[in-house]
Image (tube, rainbow, N blue to C red; front, side, top):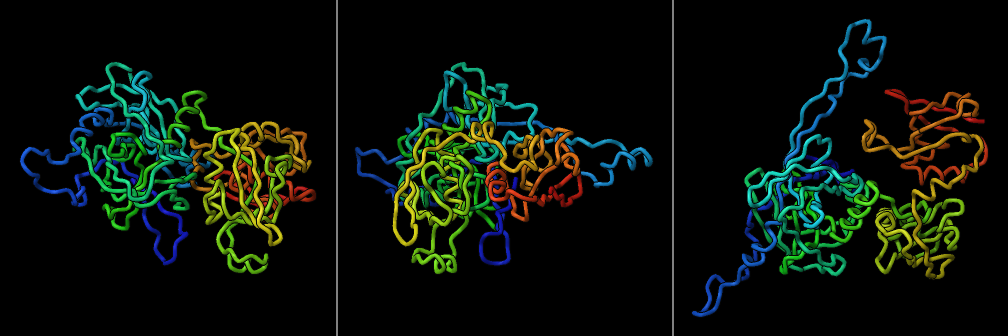
Length: 464
């Protein structure tokens, strides 16, 4: 299973990112520094006692699903289908193998990756003792690639989590999973980097990077420390050839559990929100703004009555750190805020007019903000909007907002806007989601030029 890395790196090649249903072979780097023999009476150092405790909690996941096979756009035209007697959409059966980790034995909760169970209509979990158990999907979050399934809570073993925020580069780790359908295997290595983002693998990225060998079939497996505590859920490798080259990624367990509890409670995830739009700092912008720092992100806009506006952030502020961590680019800001719990305070260090300042902003709820949000530009009155749902054929293909409902008496309806249309830009400013959409609208009180996608075509629509 593959995902393409966004072309944000130098060179002419996109680097394939392989999302693996993850396991690992005992690699050449498996604690090679340990002695091969010991004096009489001393035990040889071994990971076996720890693994005996944790491997029963790592499971194999098999899924069966169905997907609609893409056809020519002509086949979507009702007249064409009727005239030429073209059959309807064709469904194809899919199968997938992956891994999962039992994190709550009493509730029967298993953490895995969204891409492991995506499109599944039947999920079967195989335990280390050979039992095959039916599983139900509790919920999934494509933006972080986290999914939660539930199995009967009978005689299960779970892995206790560690604090993934306390990890350090150089800590020894062990990856456990089911690669290539061979059965449970392990590999060892170290944490080679932390807080990796901007890779284009997921919508929100804050990865643990490890050199533990990763192979196809291991996604959703466990990354544990030498105490046998769970520190991450393995999700991807970085590779040009399809094989392991020593760069793998895991979702920190603190983030995974935060997502899990929301999915268990409500079935969906409510993102942290402060209401700002940011862009990357460049040397040219740094010179124009009179700052020496060429890394960071610039605030370009904020939502009306948003937490950012209430806290005093202003367009032109150069964000240089967030909660004590350096801001490298706009992705750092988006990812950090998006995974924060609602109600938590985030601290920004910034430059404004050449002076360094610190501003604290309370994280709000994206859902509650959008529900209470009014559109200042009356040309879009009488319409409700939403983000592109993960079930949509457009998900991951285009970025924008969906017109959910529209009053037939509204100006937009009279100009031709319809339910199901996807708005991808406003006055030539590209938008990714509802948050950016509302922020952009706040900048325009007059006429609006909307680019919309409807079916297999695109057009511009002017609202005066």
